[in-house]
Length: 333
Length: 271
Ligand code: HEM
Image (cartoon, rainbow over all chains, first blue to last red; front, side, top):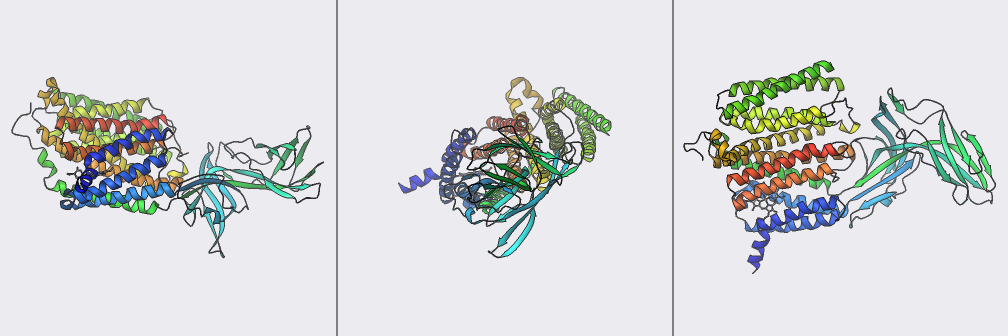
C-alpha cells in the first residue's frame, strides 16, 4: 500500500499534472483571478513531494548522477521559491531630505510569514542629484543616505540605480519618483503645539507643473501651492543635473482668492494661526524589498543547471553528435 | 553614418533573400548549390554585423532597446546559428528550406518596425544584460536548429514533399539530433533566466516580478521541460516529437518577440 502510494507520488504523470496545473494557473494569476502566492506554494509543494518520491523510487537517478544533482537542486529551488513567497516583503516609501525613515512603508505587500523587522530600520535621506541627457533621459542617480550600524557607528553611502541600501536584508533603492518638497511650520493661534509638514510636489521632471493642493492639518484652510523656479532646471534640449534649486519662490493661493508669494522664512497669517514657509527640500521615493531566500535560490539554480549540463554531457558523449548525420543505408518513406 | 548603416542592412537583406531562394533550389530542384547558400548567408551576416556595429557605435549602446533593434540583432544571431549549423552539418543543409523562411518572417517583421534612434536607460549599464541576452540568443538559436531538423521529419510525413528530403538521415536519427539541440536550448534557456534574474535584481531591486515577459518565458521553459519528460515517458514517434518542438518554438518565438511588441518595453519597469 505504502509502496504503491510512493510509486504514484513519484510518477512522471503526476509531474505532468502539476506542470499542467502551473501552466494553466499562471495566466489566471497574471489576470489576478488566482492568488500567485497560493498557486506557487501549492504547485511548489506538490513538486517537492513528487520529486522527493521520485528520487527514492526511480533507479534512473542512481545511474545518472547529473540528473540526481539536477532534480535534488530543483527541490531546493522550489523549497526556496516557496519560502520566498511566504516571507517576502515589498513596499514603497517617500522621504523628505533630512527625514529619518520611521520603519513603516507607505504601501506594502508581504508574504503571510513575513517577520516584520522593518519597523526597527532607520536611515536618513540626505539629498540627491540626478543626471539627465537631452530629451529628459534619466542618467545616474546619486542619493546620500546616513544610518547607524549596530546602533552607534554612523555610516554614510551614496546609493542609486544599481546600488541599494541594505539594512538587515531590507534593500532600499531609489526610484524615478522624486522631486521637491516645501517645508512648512504651522503655529496654531490657540497656543497648542506647532507642527511641521513637508509637502511632496509631483515627481520632477516627469511633471513640470509643480502644483499641489493642501489642507492645513486640524484646520479648514485649503491652499494651493505652486513652485516658481527662477532658474532653469529641466532642459529637454541639453544635458543637465537635477538638484535642489537655489532661486525659487512659492505661490500660495487661498480659497478666498488671496495670493501670497513666499521666500524662505516668509509667513502667512490666518485667523487660526501662522504658516511659516521654512524652505525647499527634495524628496525621494524608495522601493523596499526583502527576500531571505534569494541567495539560496541563486545557488540552487546554478547547481541545477550544472547538474543538467553534466547529465547531458555524459548522455551525449556516448554517441558523437555527428553520428546522427551519416546518410542512412535505408531510405525513409 | 546612418546612410552606411541602412545601406549595409539592405545589402544584407538582399543576401538573406537570395539565400532563401537558393535554399528552395537546393531542396526542391535538387541542385548542389549548398556552398553558394553558405556564402550568401556569411556575406549577409558580415554586412548585417557591420550595420549593427555602426549603429552601436553611433548610439553608444547595443541593439536591445526597441523592437527593431531586438528583431535585427536576433535575425543576426539566429542566422549565425543556422550558418554555423550548416557549416558543421553539411549533410543537413536541406533544413535551410525550413529555417530560412522562418528567418525571413523575422526579417519582414524587422523591416516594418520603427528603426528610430533609441536611448539606453541607466539600468541597462551592467554586464548581466549582455550575459542574459547572450544566453537567450544561444537558447533560441539551438531551438531553431532543432526546429529545422524537426521540419525535415514533418516534410517527410507530407507525401509530396517527402521525396526531396529522402536522402537525408532517417527519422529516428534526426529526432535524436533535434532532441539534443532542444536540450542544449533548455540549458541555455535556464542560464538566461538566472542571468536575467541577477540583472533584474541589480537594475530594479527584485529578481522576478512576474511581468508578462518573465511569466511567458517561464512558460516556454516549462514547456521545454514537458517536452524533455515526454520522451522517456511516452517515447513519442519522431513526427510527434517534431510537432512538439515546432509548437514550443512557435510559442517561444511569439513570447520572445510578441510580448515586447505588445508591452511598452522588453521588460516592464525598464524606463
Ligand atoms: C520543472 C521541473 C522539471 C524539470 C525542468 C525537469 C527536467 C528534466 C530533464 C531535463 C530530464 C532529462 C530528460 C532527458 O534525458 O532528456 C529529466 C528527467 C527526469 N525527470 Fe525531471 N524535471 C522536472 C521535474 C521533475 C519532477 C517533478 C519529477 C518527478 C517525478 C521528475 C522526474 C524525472 C525523471 C524520473 C527523469 C528521468 C527520466 C528517464 O530518463 O527515464 N522531474 N527531468
